[in-house]
Image 1 (cartoon, rainbow, N blue to C red):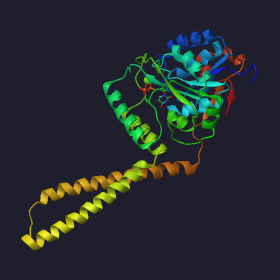
Image 2: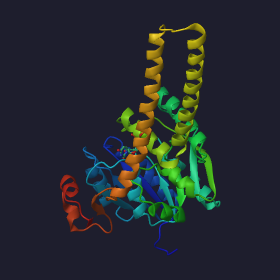
Image 3: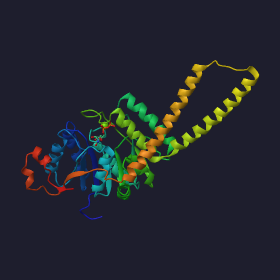
Amino acid sequence: MTAAMPAVSVVIPVYNEQDVLPALFDRLYPVLDAIGERYEVIFVNDGSRDRSPQLLAAQYRLRPDVTRVVLFNGNFGQHMAIMAGFEQVRGAIAVTLDADLQNPPEEIPRLVAAIRAGHDYVGTIRKQREDSAFRRIASKAMNRLRESITRIQMTDQGCMLRAYDRALVDTLNACHEVNTFIPALAYTFAASPTEIEVAHEERFAGESKYSLYKLIRLNFDLVTGFSIVPLQWFSLIGTLLSLGAGALFVLLMVRRFVLGAEVEGVFTLFALQFFLIGIVLFGIGLMGEYVGRIQQEVRNRPRYRIAAVLEGPVAAASTLAPAAAAAEPIGVPR
Ligand code: UDP
Ligand code: MG
C-alpha cells in the first residue's frame, strides 16, 4: 500500500438526486474527514436528467483532492453504476452507500472497523427499516426465496450500505455480468463475511427510483443470476403433474368401465386446464429469463458507457459556470 493510496473509497450511485445531494455532501464529508485517513468519494451519475451532474461537478471542484465523478451517458441501473465505481476504486476498503441518505454516512467508520477486524465483506441489517409496508413485506418474501434457492446467507439483502476489502473488489471487477446484484455476487466470493446492524432513515427527499417493474426485474436478476434451482423445481413440478395425470387417466378408465360414459364436469375441466396452462406459461417465461440472460452475456457488449470522469486537480475549466461544466465535463473523456 502506498502513501497515496486512500484507506477508504466510498462509492455512491446517483440517479436524479438533486434534492438530496447538498444534504449528502454536508453529512458525508465531515464523517470521512473525522476518520483522519486518506479517503476518496466516487460518485457515479447514472444518467440523471435533473441537476445532479451539475451538483456533482460543483462538489468535485470544491473537494477535487478527495472526489471523483463518473458520468454515464445514460441510465444503466444502480448495480451497473456501482460496478463502474468499483473500477475506479483505489482504496484498501470500498464502502457503498445510497445517495438518498437512507444509509446514514455516520455508520461508515463501523463498517471500516469490521473490515479491519479481519472480514473481507461486511453486510448490514437495517435495525428499523424506514420503507413502505409493501416494500418491507415483499423484501422479506424475497429474502426467504433467496435463502431457499441459493447458498447466499444474508439477513437483509436489500441494504446497500456495505463494505468490501480490496481483493474482493478486484474479484468483482473481474466479473462482467450484465445484470447483477452486487451484495449477492460479493457474497459468493467472500471468505469471511460478517453482518452488522445499522440505522436506516427515510429517504431525505425525492422518491424511490425503483418502480414496481424495476423491483421485479431486480429480483429476477437475483433469482436467475445466482441459482438454477427454479428450473430444477420446474422439472420436478412437471414430473409430479405427469404422474398425477397418469393416475387420473387410470382412474377415469376404471370409472368408464365400472360406471359407463360420463360427461359431467366440463367447468372443472376448464379450471384444471387453465391452471395447467398457467404453469406451462410460467415455465416458458422462467426459461426465457435464463435464455435472455445467456443472450445478454453472449452478445458481450459493453455494460455501460462513460461520458467523462472528473478527477485530479481542477483545471482552468473550473471557471466555467456549473451548468456548462457538467455539459462539457473536465476530466478524461472515455
Ligand atoms: N439509483 C441509480 N440508478 C437507478 C436507480 C437508482 O443509480 O436506475 C441510485 C439512487 O440514486 C440511489 C440508490 O441507487 O442512490 C438507491 O435508489 P433508491 O433510494 O431509489 O432505491 P430504494 O431505497 O427505494 O430501494
Ligand atoms: Mg432509497
